[in-house]
Each structure stands twice: as C-alpha cells, then as structure tokens.
Image (cartoon, rainbow, N blue to C red):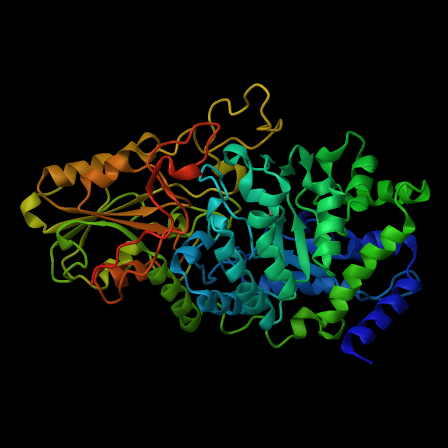
Length: 600
Ligand code: GLC
C-alpha cells in the first residue's frame, strides 16, 4: 500500500471512532492564555496557538517546551471519553522564531525579496525550523505569500515582492526549508490580502478574477505543489465578500482546482464579522471550506454553536467529516502521531538555538538585502580608518531593526529584549576604531573631527493594521474601500517619512550643513517618500527590517561584501492618491522595482 494509502486508512479508521464532540474539538484552535491542558483533553482540542508575543514563563526555549509538553500530554491521554490525537501548536515564526528571547531573527520578507536569492530562503527556512523545534513547537504560520501592491499596507514587509513571479519563486523554497527540518508550514493569507484598495489592512481587494489569479493566487500554486499542508484564510474581502465565507475561493479554487488536500485555518477571530449570530457565522465559515477555527477566546461558544448548527443540518456532517479528515491527514502524513512528547524530543531545547552558525545565515541575508539608492562621489564603501560620526534613532536599537512580530506582536524598541545579535552601531564600531556614536544629546562636537556621518533612521516597529498609512478618511462615496468598525488605528496618514519623523531629516541636514557628507541608512517595513532625505544625503541605503544581525549592514558599508539588493517593490516619489497605488502605470515612481546600485 502507498504511504498515502496507509495514511488514508488510518484517517478513516480514526474518524470512524470519533464522536461529534471529538470532531468539532479537533477543528477548534484556542489561544494559550485561554485554555488549559485539562481543557484540551476535556474538549478534545486539535490545536492551540500563541498569538504574537504570547510567551510562557521567562520566554526561554525550555519554557516553551514545558508548555507544549503539557498540552501534548493532555491531548494524548486516551481513555473511555478521549481519543489520543496529538495537539498541533502554532506560532508566528515569520522571520525566525522571533517570539522567543535569544532567537536568530531574520530580515523580514521584504528584505529577503530584495536579496533575490531563493536558495537563501531555503537556508533561512531550515534555521527557523530548527529554532521552532527547539521550543517544542511543530507548526509556523508562515510563509506569507501576499503580493503587496500598495506600501500603505501595514503588512507590506511581510511580502517578498510586488511581483507575483518572485513570490511564487520563493514559495516552494521556503516551504521546503521549513518542512525539510520537520515543522509544518502555513501559506497565508488566502487570498488577495496584499491587494486591498489603498492598502487598508483587512480591506477589500477589488480586482477581477483574471488579476486575482495572475497576481494573488499564483504563489499558492507553487506552495501547494511543494506540499504545504495548511493554508490560512485572509481577513480581507474580494469584491466586497469576506474571504472567510467565500466558498468559491476556498472550496472551488483552492481545494478543487488547485487540488489542495491539507486543511484551511481561519485567521484570528475571522469568523466574528461574518454574521451577527455567532453560530451562523461559524456555520458560514465551515460551509465555505474552513476546516479549523482560530478562536482564541470564544472557543467554548464556537464548539457549542457549531454542534447546534450540525444538529440543525445547517452544517452537513459530511462537511465536518471532511474537515476533520483533512486535519487528521496532515497530522498522520507529517508524522505527528509517531513523535515522542515535546520534552523527549532530541530537537527540543536544541543547542543550535541562537547559535553563531544560525546567526551567520541571518547576517548573510542582511548583507544581501541592502539596496543602494544613491552613492554620490563614490561615498561608499567607507574607509574603516575614517573618523565616522554615527547618529540617528535607529543606530543602536536592535528592537527597532527587527520590526513587528518580534518578542511582542507589535515588536519592541531598545536592546534589552533582543538577546544576542548586534545593532548596526555595534557592527560599525567593531570595524571602525574611530567611529563615534552620537545619540542626539547636546551639540555635535566640531565638524572638523569627522570625515563622514552615518545617519541610521527609520520607522518604529508595527504589525498589521497598526502599520497602515491611511488617509484620514479612506472611505469615499461609492467606494469598496471600507475601514471596518474597530479596525486598528493606523501608523499615520502619509508615506512621507519627513512628515512622520522630522527629526531624521533635521539630523541629516545638520551634519551636511557642517560639511560632513552623510550616508543615510533607512530602516523601514516598506518603500517611503524620502525625497528630502535623499537630496540631503551623499549616499542612501534601504535596509528594510534587517533583524538581529545588524552587523551585516557594516559588512557592506565598509565594502567587505558588495551591494547586492534590488528593490522588490516600486519606490514612490509621492503619496499615491486614494484611488491610485504606487506604480500604477508608472505614475509616482521614483525608482522602479529591480533598481539598486552596485558600485564596482
Ligand atoms: C493575526 C494575523 C496572522 C497571524 C495570526 C496569529 O491576526 O493576521 O497572520 O498568523 O493572527 O497570530
């Protein structure tokens, strides 16, 4: 019998033994803060997750292993009322296992997109997987396969590129990297999350089916072909209809036409907005093809309501059986039934966690991600013997260089929470003995003391809708652009960096006015309007969100490694209009996708 046949036999045999309660429990995913191991057993829960920043005890790998071991043991305690089905624990290890203290934190996807190195993606995936396994975890909600089309979107940095072909080219590599080391990947968010009007997070993607297929679905074909076992539904809408209730998108296109045989997970409370009555909302999601419900706090209600919907015939038992079979098929096929308990696994508490070898891979990614946008008079590379003044709010801030989904959902500022790794200043100091860090207190000492200034500035960390750049009223008469009530408050209302962070331009101009040529390094989750900062700088580097290994920036600034990066997205010359988006027909583009200087 083929392995698939053997798996199928096990699936059907186990399914036949399951009660309705056990089936619905298997489809339910609470968040760790709202469910105990005892409840995992009592309600036959199939999965538990950590939301961004939801970390046990002292947030060390050993704390994660202990937590997962308790959930796993409860799920496997078979008795008359409970069947042993191993729990699946899921985390957002989206750029390394960056929730956990001391982890190797990779550049966010936009930087990996700039690197243009698919093999690097596979290496990054393997390192990430090892550091997820070290925490006793089996499943990451990655890769994000969004094709970001508007930098106003707060999740632009989670996208590899505005070009679907690039994202598709990366998809298989990152899936293979993650799964090759033994964790489950999750392609997200199905579908069109990066194409919403005006970049509004969880907004409405108003494109025809041809564009939806060509741009936003394309990367998923590669991921499905590479064997991605789970897909997460998008909180956005397509032409006014929520993806979470879209049977055509999920059942017909993803599962039917694309032949996806794994299971579809809802996103965080993605059920709630579907209908006023919770039971009706849950039924809509499940009938549309969602197999597992991410219901962090309301999991008890969902179980009760879904059971009622089945008893009333609103949700056919055949749909429940299909959903559970998909979940079991993934657990069997990925060997979860054969794995020992987390505390007994060789990879748990793995010695490679945050290791030099892992950090070397991340540092290589940083080097390859940097895009040189300007280099007047061959200012770069720098002479390591030069008298260098390093300034700027992001120069010595490991948290800021990591961005969102790091330790906390919204990321952190400062250095305390990011153990291991190097800030960009620490990387420069290690190379250039005459470099001085000026943290903006008091007057800059005499300009004659310095040959060059390196000003490192950037956005504060953010995640999801809190990173949106939203016009004060993106809603306009007759528009699809809707900002749902309660949508997270945006980061700001303009892509103009000087408007949001004027202190950066002040510093650049002050140094330049004192005759100190300035190399500006920008930390950002997206392309920004930086016309004034560019004009005042001799050289300008887009560094994206490089992660924990800031020294990789110094490797390139001093010429130990060449500039390699190319823009993964169009770089705007102006704030797009509410109707338009950067790059539409080339309007408002300062540098096209693919631009990047490579001084010989
Ligand atoms: C969030 C995000 C999703 C993430 C999930 C769990 O809302 O949309 O990308 O995986 O919740 O944290």
